[in-house]
Structure formats: C-alpha cells, structure tokens
Length: 137
Image 1 (cartoon, rainbow, N blue to C red):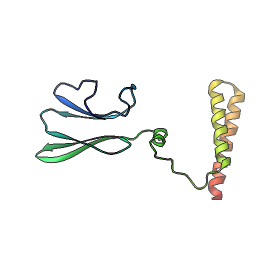
Image 2: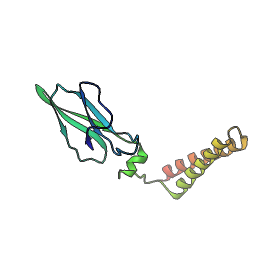
Image 3: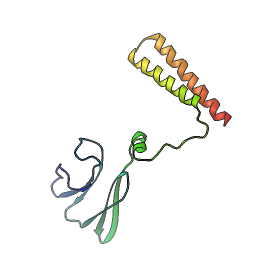
Image 4: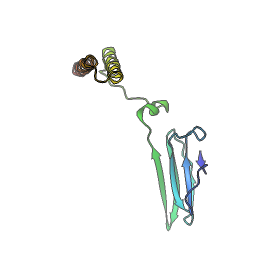
C-alpha cells in the first residue's frame, strides 16, 4: 500500500509509505521522506517483504529503497521457512521443549532453587543432545 498515510509529513516533505496492515495499529512498515522540490517517482515492487522504492532525479537518476526484514517468526508467516538442518531429530525437539518449559517455570518462580536447578539440568541436557546430534550426522 504505497501512498499517503493518515499521519502527516513534516512541512515541505512527501512520505512514501508501505504499511502492511494500515488499519490495525502499529505493525512496522517502511517509509521514505523526500523534499517536495526534488522530482521523484514511486516504484511499484512485487515483494512479500515491507519495501518502498522511489526513483529520484537530481541531474542523474537514483533509486532509493527502504526495506524492513521482519523477525524470523514473521518471516515464516510470509512463506520464508527456516532452513532445516540435517542433524535435527525428535530428541532435539524434545530437549529444546523441556528446556523452554523449565525456563518458563524459572521465570514464574524466581528465586526458587529447585526451579533453578531443574532449568540448569534441562539446559545441560539440551546442550548435550544437540551436540551429540551434530556429531552423529
């Protein structure tokens, strides 16, 4: 969605915006501000990422691009999958899940020595399982 936004630009400037979800609050996006005295043409890009590009004419033609690379979780939503590793196994998944559960318990019960010890054991097991899986591949 390239064009004007509901927010105003600074006086004397134009904003070229790409907001992925314009009516759902703050969800990132990209923007390019240019001075109104400089001739500019907006470029349409076909990309699942949040990107804005303009062609600026100042004696020569320049292309300016603003790109936002979202966190890994959102990249998966856009269809950019994680790169799988050949050594990953069900034991690796289980070890990581147990470590996360232990960390969650540690956060809920700060200062509890039993939760701290459980997290340390799970973290060590996770490290050992992943290391063994890498070595075995």
